[in-house]
Image 1 (cartoon, rainbow, N blue to C red):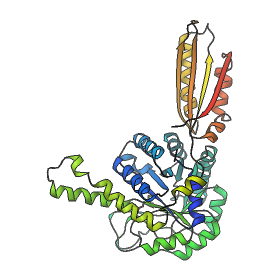
Image 2: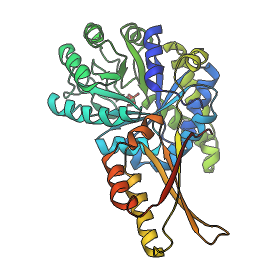
Image 3: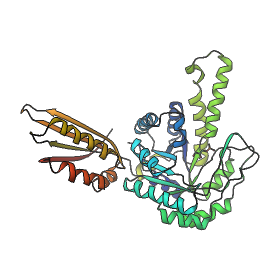
Image 4: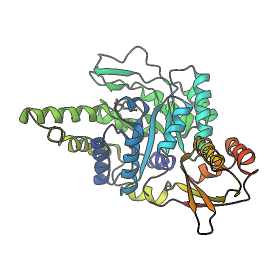
Length: 393
Ligand code: 13P
């Protein structure tokens, strides 16, 4: 239940002058570390699941754990696909469990970035899902660092940001004002004047990628100029690595659980410090009260097939339905079942799980759904009963 609408969560932070931490989740230790730290501080939090990390873990399995963790948390949680590369990545992220997506087309020219972002916004908003876009380019530095930001940094231009935000309809904007992903040697130089102009131009919550390595005062200035979400990861990966190395010194032949036993606390301590600094500590109750909870919806469809229809034909229709309907954005799962009643007739059902009520409403108008109903079901189905309900967990 404490899964919370990320647009509402960030707007709350934006209005009240604090920033929500968005921490990358790259293992179960990270997931527990983030949620425990946020609960200790009574803070709203964003679990970032980056598409780029999929090389290190199975996205769907970690997402299932993130959803379970978010649902049982005592604080408001949003789950965001971080650095989604395409419309299909965003569709898959929502299907897997995200209630927010970041589309990163920032390496493309402005018009292509805008086209790609708008496509994602149209799809995601139809499912009630928050969209973060990025304009300007926040580069990546590998490993331990460079003397100065890489050459390919492209700063966000305020006038372009205004046009991009208005035309795409994004809910929050990631900006490039001097941060980089990863750790720089020395403190990055931030263009706060530029940030202030962007904030004034767009009037929506801003997002900072590359939180690692910034000083306390820099964070305060970012938040004072419209930043409501801060993405933070490398410093967590570094303290996790340091914790394992410390364990290795005292247990040179230590097993996996022994070596990783300090990771959760090490990450948690770092996160708690950031949450307090960014002002999100103690905000959980207000956010839970004022922001829309995120609720999945399920639909059950009950129907009978004509008695004369061959079993193979029935199975073919079921399979076609499961495949077609399962690809519609906002549909999370389609299950089909059959029961043989004492009257000797077979009865069938579909259970369709949607990301949200908006997604369920959108589904009923989707061309793939209408085509399937008109072409495959209506000609053979004498009766069909459907019921929607909120899927409480
Ligand atoms: P850092 O790894 O530099 O903290 O950045 C994380 C990030 O921006 C994830 O999107």
